[in-house]
Length: 110
Image (cartoon, rainbow, N blue to C red):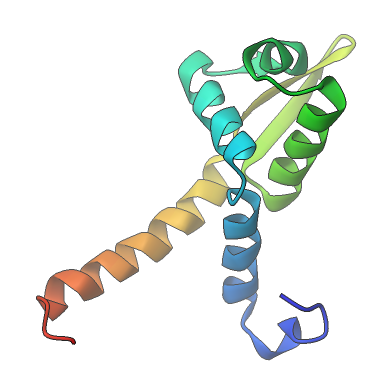
């Protein structure tokens, strides 16, 4: 979305678009799935899990963190990442809203 047009949309619409963009890459989906599988991990563990370089993994982690989908805490010289419930709650609310609409619609369109 062009930076000059975002002011025409609500804060919630812009936040959801940022979340959707963050999960719009298969590597980021794989990172999220890995975090679910192990409950938490350090960046090195993710590098060993995915066929991507450490700098590429770090960039994907940065995008997920900036979008509010993961959070990280320093543990010594490493960062321990886990899912950020707040970001996923926003996605869940949106899809619940869509699902409610679809259930009420009962295929009455096109």
